[in-house]
Image 1 (cartoon, helix red, strand yellow):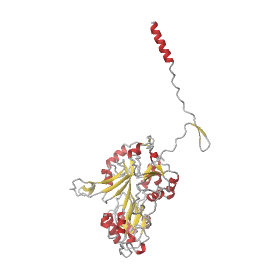
Image 2 (spheres, one colour):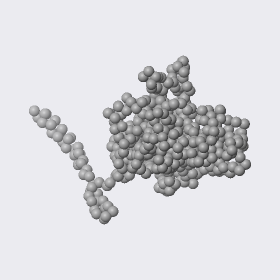
Image 3 (tube, rainbow, N blue to C red):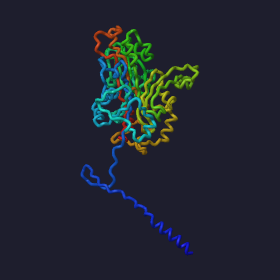
Image 4 (cartoon, rainbow, N blue to C red):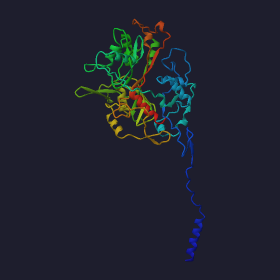
Length: 478
């Protein structure tokens, strides 16, 4: 018994020598003073949240040609960072671009440092790997520029950008509306920004098609109206090219069919044909596994409903079903927001529904509003929305609607979104420089047009429903 008491006493003395647990630290009292000189108690307000970054394509310098197509012919000169951003975002006011440089919100990334999708989603210190760039820094081949997505936000118009006509002869107001869509007009071509929901070719039940409307409203005194050089889907929007003369229509149609078919013995014209390019912006459901790449997937047509409808699918590898070659280059422009991603598409061939099928079946990310090729994905996307996370902190956030912005029909938050596919940029040869008014062709350009540029570059702003989606998805972290 005595031995047991000694053991208990020793244990008590040993426990008494241990330091008591540290008291829980109370949250420090912080006094905040706002702009109205009112003192408030509590934790300080969190700082500004990180901005979603828009990735521009690599700078294409280093070649023999001008890295900024569409300018007047001149000696090669250096290209600064602000010039490259203003060139790529030509539809953005220049003062907005300059303001982002002044606020030090523009970053550069060299070609040897690739950024993967996983890095953008999970990297908390991604901005430390990017270097701030000044407006007068000289661009080098392969350099990438990243800047906030909000730089491309646009003003939303309340009225819908559709043509309210159903007759063969549009009235005066409709003709004026059509002419406001024209972006460029010269003696050879006509370029306009096509609104959505307007078909290309008319038939008995369809009168408000672009070919009929152009012949009625865009002739500008010529005996024949302009002819469509290429086509866009009815639900899509963007740049649409017309040929005003038979010679210009024929040569541009060859160019859109095959670059080699349009070439001649003129080196100047052939170089301009090699620079031909189209860029589309699209909003897709999900994110491609690779951030950029080239899709080479032949396409074939399948007749449905006893030949009344058709559908384009990926062709069988054997090629026995009349497959056509189809190649598309793509690039992811930013992070995944609301389960969607903005991507840039560059078709290298011109097949029907090529971009829509390549996005839906080859990449597995159908375009928002494309119910023909992505119906089941749309159902899962609307029924089971995926939570989004901030790319820097990893915290979940809720998509908020910008203040003062009415969610119109067709945006990404509507129940039935419209097709988010827009032909934004186009670079074509300046055919008016090689073609005289009487139809005579000049291999090296007409003598009176030496100062004109060899290339023409056009950029069309997005329609209202895509602008709303862009503003919504770019403003919640800004």
